[in-house]
Length: 446
Ligand SMILES: [Zn+2]
Image (cartoon, rainbow, N blue to C red; front, side):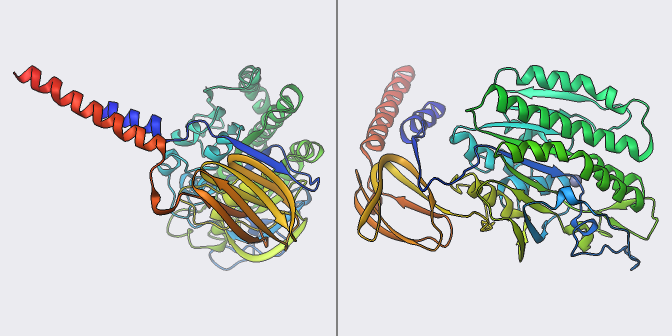
């Protein structure tokens, strides 16, 4: 009985089919798709030109030059609030500093919920960070079931993958042994990473070639920089970063050549007790407060972002709202406390109503655009300009002035929280069901 009521209420009050109108003005270049590339355990301290890495005992550690990993828009100061793999991945995808693996599974908690509602498919290739709720968010994921480099166990989990992607991922699952053959030491770790990068690149290229109009968000995690930090020394750890710089280039080219937004980041960094220490760490008490564990890279290329370095203080929870902004998607993350980093070379207005509205956009008394829907996205407006939004719909007429120092969200809801005809209908129906239920129960009792 209770179940029936809940289902009825959900069916009648939720906007099951999201109607979105996207209006792009001024011929700006928007990325159709995005790649979120997470390098597990990759501390920016070890390669950002601005930083010098130190060991716990104060000794200076070796650094690498990694030209392919410092492209585009680079955020210098960005840290994770919790240098722990599962939690930090949860922070990245929810934009919430107190997120955990459970929250990732909540409705409207992640970037994947927003992308899915706006017609994207969510694809993933992950060696670490692929906990159950993370996998559930994906339409298809190729992932490592264990963290073993000696006997890697690769699996695929799929809901509704674009045609051919399952087969492609299966081919890549079968290619893993060839990558690892005759490899040892740090070379084996790099081979494991290269497999993940090449598989992700193959997935991106297949989407571009075989599904050119399908928007996608491809999440990648490569795991062996983290494993190398834990199991090898600080010297091998930076060697693995050098190898990543080389092996990453084909994926970078794919994004660059096809106008795909590419976000390179990490869940957390890595710390070492001393120079030539044979083991590193990041989450235990000894390491977790170290800058080397907390600092992560954030490097972005996208056709609509301004290249260069940003030196303000940022947090890992800012990544999710920033990624949505770059894709011109509204920040509807349910739990986020992150802030959008302003890197886009234009602004967008996201309009959401409780029913369909006719919305027009005005500048200097001139109508720029008009459209009707319950959700509208006006993308491509010049930064630092002001517009007036006029809306008419079931809830009345509205006028709102917006100043575009960045993306703006505007909602139209009926005043005094009055019920829509749909909600009224739902309530009447529920009463009928309850009364019907009582009559049935009475009859049974009698
Ligand atoms: Zn990790």
